[in-house]
View 1 (cartoon, protein in one colour):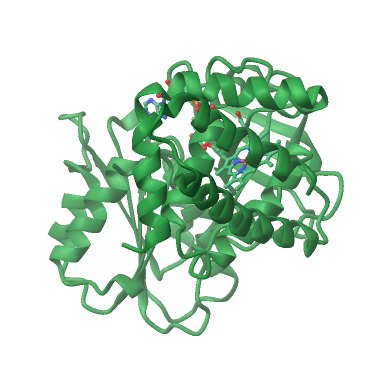
View 2: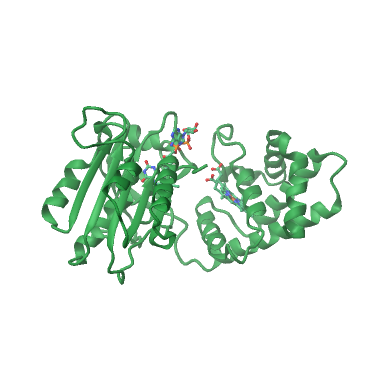
Length: 371
Ligand SMILES: Cc1cc2nc3c(=O)[nH]c(=O)nc-3n(C[C@H](O)[C@H](O)[C@H](O)COP(=O)(O)OP(=O)(O)OC[C@H]3O[C@@H](n4cnc5c(N)ncnc54)[C@H](O)[C@@H]3O)c2cc1C
Ligand code: HEM
């Protein structure tokens, strides 16, 4: 471990136990010295009190080699435009972070820790600012909801029409703010279509328990409402030069980016066999099966396998989708695309590793934490 990384880790252990207090102090410091910054943050800070603080601490500690994370940091800086973050805010936030830690660390805190955090933060901030500066996109796009269909209790498929051209690649995702119902809360959702001439975008959203943004998108959003969209991100794209057959593995609404990639393939593919594995707990959660079957009937290169893990009378495959994929192997020479919840992606990656699939052939997006 380098000296800087050691100092950062060592100093964090002094405050780790008091994270809540550190977070409270951090935000109080920012909002007292710069009251206008309060408007950048969500109304209910209690639900995600330490979201930004955690994000910065994780970034500073894990990105001790900023060179390696240059692209990620530039994208993060571009993405911060949606929060109305300006370059001068970085100094305020960095100062508050160090003061909050110093105030709670006790006597063991030393000047070398101040310096280590200031140095690491400055490098990261400068890359984020450079990313934002170089970006020619608007901070966000307004889009009108033009269709909204409930598919069961927890799920909605909806289409929006951005007010200005929004360019993206099939397989990407972007952050959505459900402006009318949950202002200033942004969450990421994958586009479920390839770029279209009419510029519309489709999303598949499952509401998660008391989830703030997903439940508003599923239960409250209506045709005619406006939402905000931030710049597209993500690298789960098709390589048009690849001649390998492809395997798509989706859990639940992880189907969204898979549909996007399939729509792109329908425009040019003649030579690659494409296998889709779509899994969910019960048949009601296979919310888009009719459309998948329609695609499979129309394109002879496409096959679809469905599986349920908790629906013993389901007539398709039984079990976790990763096990089903393994049963259909071997998959010696394929490109893989995996998307869904953290646990689903994690177990699929494990299965693929066991089947000796080289990791360079696998692209994935995990919707939740994989730990
Ligand atoms: C790259 C990427 C793409 C994504 N694409 C999609 C997509 O196309 N469709 C889609 O529906 N979602 C997608 N997600 C997930 C989405 O971004 C949100 O995480 C999700 O909608 C929950 O947000 P929320 O505001 O409703 O919940 P939050 O307010 O963030 O969380 C509320 C509560 O729900 C709990 N919770 C959060 N996640 C889960 C979970 N998986 N299971 C059980 N409880 C949970 C939390 O513990 C918390 O207590 C994607 C995520 C990523 C990272
Ligand atoms: C090194 C500097 C910074 C890093 C690494 C960083 C990183 C992040 C990350 C990763 C998130 C997403 C958190 C999540 O979705 O879970 C986030 C959210 C956010 N950031 Fe930053 N950020 C930095 C600086 C700033 C600055 C200077 C501001 C300006 C005030 C800012 C304002 C915000 C806001 C408003 C959110 C949303 C918070 C929320 O939803 O509660 N960030 N930041």
